[in-house]
Length: 62
Image 1 (cartoon, rainbow, N blue to C red):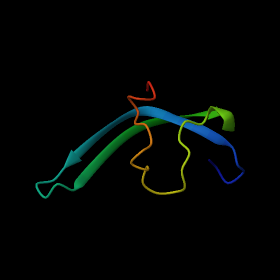
Image 2: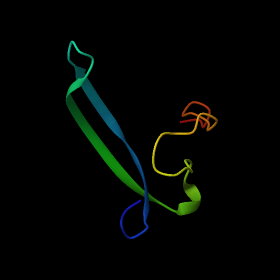
Image 3: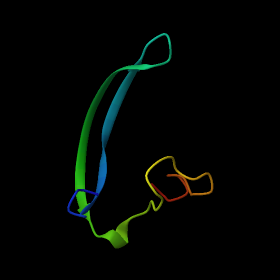
């Protein structure tokens, strides 16, 4: 959601590279934002980690 209350679905490709310590050291991303209506949202929780009981991407058919 942007500052004006408009919702978007983001999709694209990401490539990550990790260092020997397991931390990400490089990220390349090509992300597109598609405007959606609030009724099309599939994730509904406050800012932060997804709740353990919320369906994952596979369960939502994504």
